[in-house]
Image 1 (cartoon, one colour):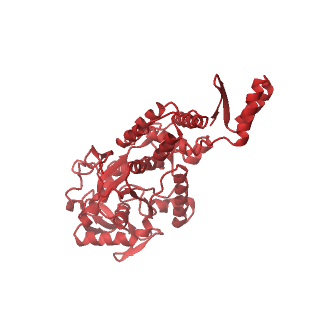
Image 2: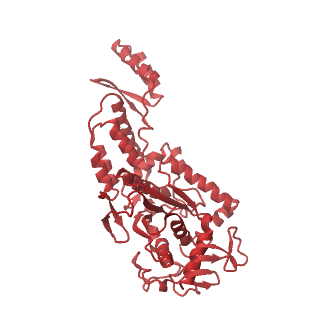
Image 3: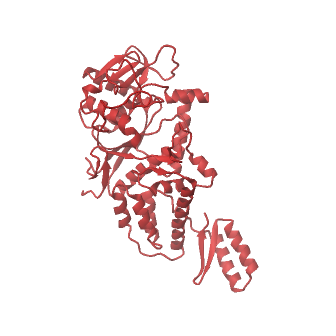
Length: 453
């Protein structure tokens, strides 16, 4: 099939026409959350963008097989190879076991995932379910001469992989290392960029998640789990690998090195990366504690789908600053679209061409342009809005129900009351509808009802 989709490929640093290996099964891998604390809106922006990717592929006739991982072991507090495992840190701070912490926050993540009406992955893979596969890759890398052992782990020797710096266009010789650099210093490393594929638990270190390997207890490196999961479920080479721009210089660079060294095949044909959300000019992150959760937004009377609307108003490659004022504007826009659906229920449908919307979003997931095109439509028809809902997952029709028989009867009684100039009854009936989230507009064409929120 001739592709109508264009995507920006980090691998080539340009927009390319999408050409999958098998149109019936486009293989996608998404780097998922580290499940040690409550997910915030900055985390979910990425999953909203990749939800749009999946929906756009399907709208263009492609089949999709997507895997999302859950990091429940191995992600240290730095992107290098030191610090505390984030699950261990979460357990210590919450006075729970690491297994309890992982289970609790996996459930929290999945609850919010569903609240955002995101397409469920075909496979959700926990890192702890792939320890055997992790070991097999380390064995393979060791047999091929890519690893060496230090007192704290098994490391990948990047000097043995000549293409290591290519993906992120790293200047390894000019890179400053240490506290302000890309990776923390480790005196036993052969090269500063070398990374752990397996970490040893040190004497006196309390690490609940441990597996015996290389003659001592340890756990897999953070980067290794993604390669293991991809190879086990999707094979190589996959079509699309997604993540955030912060993954490019370390996590994805290391994924490529270990996977391609082990299996001698390209890991992914297309790499898509979304930009950060910021709050008051700072990246939203758990460490800075400046991120709202979806529950926080709901306490402020914003639905998860209002937030999804706000995210999709921007492009996935753009850095955007989150404010409640901007979220309120997105909520208003979503209400406007729902009230256009209400007009359809009242016999005011018009013809509308959905194809322009699909063309816009197929051009490197340009949802801002697609939204502008939707705004330009006067009313449209229910079929148009169903297609909008399928493409963006905004729950417009679900949150724009038809009026009940009782509500329609109230509207009719109000019409008769106004004809009889019984404005006291008319106002009482209007207020009764307002309590149910319905407002009435009196126009030259008669009464028109709308949703208030």
